[in-house]
Image (cartoon, rainbow, N blue to C red; front, side, top):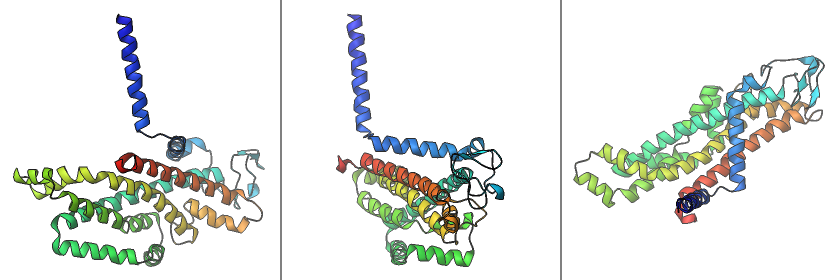
Length: 297
């Protein structure tokens, strides 16, 4: 009898595990995306452990060494070298660091700012709502890339400048969604009950409304990470973003144009890395949206 109970118990647990995995909607593309993103994060964080070169180390006698070959010094080059003899693998690793830093930090800045402004506009209304929403309308009317280039042309390029510009101009979608969520929830019973019990305005917003509106904010953030990575690469490509002495994927693509007819790898391999990272983040964003939105079941 005890053995039968054990078998039934194990079967029940296995069934619950299968249902839990099925509820997560972990398809093959999603699993691939998580694996690829994890690999890129590990390689970026521990870049010095995976290469013996510095990202700006120039070896002119080893310039344009093809991938998977040995250079003039007898060293194996996994991704070859660029037009100045710099190791492409090393520069891709350090470029991944900056891409992840830019993607995450800009979303944290823009998401926090937009969430606060959206809560303020939706809950207080009045003149605050008019000012915030008209400001959002004005920014939406301006071409984003033109705005970034104009600001960077005045302030100058740099990692900090790129992060701040992408962060402080990325608040609009968060604010609009947060405002809509607050308008839908501020007169619901759980909010009215909190008010009747004497909860302050800030407590109602922080403890009761904000936790119930995080799902769409998380979805927007997941897509904005990929978008900001691409925008940062585009700014570096046209020479108004991060300075050339800092290894970025966009900068590598820009520099590789001069040797594209002689060597394909200085441009192709950073482009593939950028594509894989953005694709992985976007697929994870789709998965998060499907997971958090019950209407898509």
